[in-house]
Structure formats: C-alpha cells, structure tokens
Length: 245
Image (tube, rainbow, N blue to C red; front, side, top):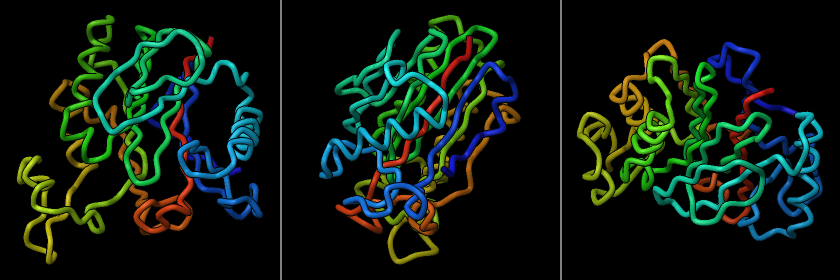
C-alpha cells in the first residue's frame, strides 16, 4: 500500500500520512478501483468499509479510534476526544493520544498540524471555498486557544490542485489576494491554493522551516484521485494524523 509519510513531523510522537489512490494494488476490481475512502462517492458502503479496514490494519491502529469529518466545504471546526464520523465539519482537533484524525480529499488540500510540546493536533479540509472562508486561520487560532504555541507548530499541506491546472472563474478569483491568482499566463485565472494556505500559516506565526508543501498535483498525477479528472469515478484519499502515547 502506497502512503506518503510527511517528514516535517520530526518526532516519533506523531503518526501522519496521506494515502495515494493505490488503484493498481488495492481493490483492483472495485466499483472505484483502489483505496477509495469516500462514503460520498456513490459506491457500495461495504466497499468503503473494507478499504478502511485495510488501511487501519496497515497503520496498526484500532478502527474505533479513527475520527473522520463529514465535510461540507465550510469552516466548522470540531474538537474531538474519540473516533467516529463527525457531521457538518471541515476540521478536527484533538489532544487525545491514539485518536487518529482523518480528512478525505480528491482535489482539495488536507492540512495536518501538530504541536507535540503541547500535545495537540488537527486535520483540516481546504478547497477554494474553505480557504476563502479562512478555515485554516480559524483552526490555528483555535489551537492557540487550547495552549498551542505557533512557534512549535508543524504543518503539512497535502497534494491538491496545483496552480498550473487550477482554473477558476472570476467570481472565485476575486475572493483571494491577487498575489495568489495568476491572471496573465492562461485564458482564465488560475489559483495558487498551496501558496495561499502557506501564506496563512506564516501569517499565524508558524515558522517557515516547520511547513512542508507537497508538490504533488492531484489532476496531473494519476497516482492520486482527482474529481476534476474523473468526476463521479473519483475516489477519495485520506490525510491522517495522530498523537502516539
């Protein structure tokens, strides 16, 4: 099973990763081939359950400790203390060891955050809507209110749509500062989502050295699922993070 393990979390107290589609090695003959973890993808839910069971077995965690957001492209944040499915939220925060936070994406970014000195982690879903609403800023502020020090916070921004392919309409482009929109190189505006999220982390005091931006582009690289490329045939990947006991 192919999983990206971010090296930005330099301590063995954090377990974090981002699943690839794995369509050539997992569930090859499924309705959506690969490690599709999205209940909203229209496939039989038992197939998703089987994939989740494969993943937790690979990670060596108990299924009941996995907390996942039922995302709505909003800015709601939920503080959790146990596993389960949390509705109407796009970010999860916990201070409980061995609770694994999970965010599912196909072209949006999953941002994983950890402050091991203060034992708090978060997982954030940010497409253009959530980013424009400021969900990442709100999550960092919420973590600070729980005792996090931004100088000891580490962050990973997952593969998502890159600026080269992230074409948007004017109504979307105008919701972002002009330095994160390329109006000149293409026939329509292109959004630099990763750059915008990176800027928000820096703006909140996270040191540059503590931030890792994954260069992967979900649309351009077939190792990833992409809703823009595959539409209803696109599975969902998982960005996940946990504090180890």
